[in-house]
Length: 162
Image 1: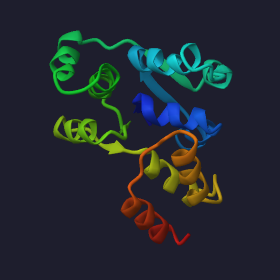
Image 2: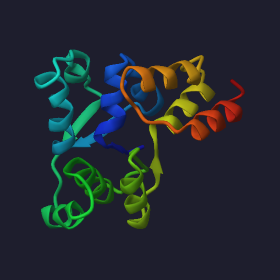
Image 3: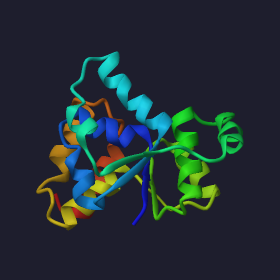
Image 4: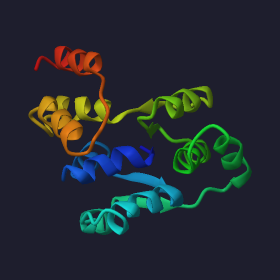
């Protein structure tokens, strides 16, 4: 299975110390160079420890092959999102892991199958990798500043019986 990730899902899990969830659910993740660079900002600008991320052999960094396509998308999205979408198309990815609403809309228009971090948490709970989606969503909100609307929060908890 090929899963490409944008910056936000990986960065958010790093901030709450739960990066391993991605490895447990997907085994491996591919990120474009720009996403790698955006994640490094957590260390260089904000002082977060990225040793787990840096040593994660299950995260592969790949260069995109079509910079013109990235530039086309850059008119609507940030650089990391644009590269993630292009790389997902180039590698015929099974999933693009992306959370930002505009990026999700464009990725779907580009024919990509998307999943968000909350969807990953639901899969992790269903696979018995984690015990509680609620506690992780709370950490994402409180520590990582991850935006989850109250209605989505309640819907997810109802869906999984928490």
